Image 1: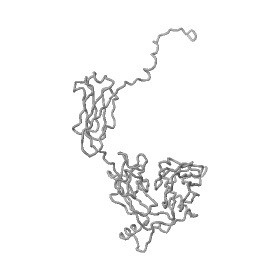
Image 2 (image 1 turned 180 degrees about the vertical axis):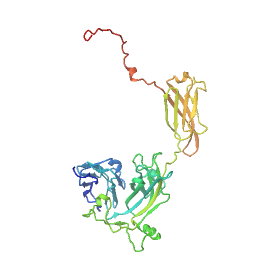
Image 3 (image 1 turned 60 degrees about the horizontal axis):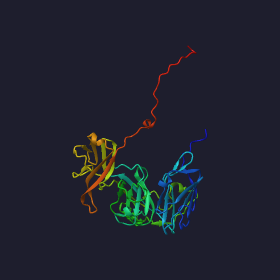
Image 4 (image 1 turned 90 degrees about the vertical axis):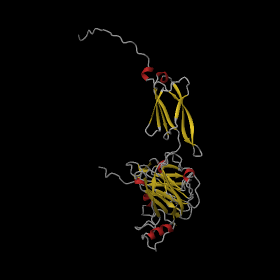
Length: 390
């Protein structure tokens, strides 16, 4: 019958330079597998931490993934390439989840981690789509609005995340649903979560917390950075994204601190018109970003429309959309109507002021394809005699 179905993910058999290398100077990385692989959505799945200004080029040659580095590497820095769920075998589509290629441009590999879970603040549900976790050494509250993070990670199933290979430092931690993949919180619709205080990432700090809780013996020792032996024969380090060292055991994780983050969407305080339509000659629809205040008003620019009752106004329950019904055929038969809208907004000094928008509503009658065709000839009745067959 051809044997059992292949349900195993691809296995890394060789990396060049070796995974978990130190004093890394190469501009090209090769990762070879035991079978043919394909890359699925790698541009969105691959997370490089720290981020690079110029994204690396990813190529696939048979059983080998080739990474060409286009950016200049920082000195004494540990880089992590996490492929997410982008690597899978050719025939069965078995995915190699969260494979990491790690190297350091210095003498040591930074080994600390921040791990945790993400939930929505409204209902404590886990996000269905990946969320970007961002760590900054700059401790300004506004840093996600302007700067690229120092380290990044991405959440997986049930909102679980891990940002690995960190150096000892104090960080600001944010999580955003990065709608445009630029690592900046710059869209009103982007979901965000953050710690309300700075996070100390330090082995000594980890020990103090565990010691106070009774989970750590006072003789336990751990360092912030370690020299790892890359690709030890007989140990499938590449397929798990981890490497063996004396710090990993069945006790508490001495390399990681765990946190929980709550996601929410900030209320957009900017008032503006998001959309307007006139798909029906008798009906005008206007949608706003926020509910309208009582000072909202409108009028026609056309001075010939002197009848103030020519429009019938209907607002949505939360007053963020408006429907205007045109009563009189004298008006709705016009191809173009110009209406001035006055509504309240906040200015740069956070004060409420009135602003005005003038909108041109045009209606063009839809012409069906059938009507564009030539008029068919007049049908005629013809009478013939069928001689054969009676």
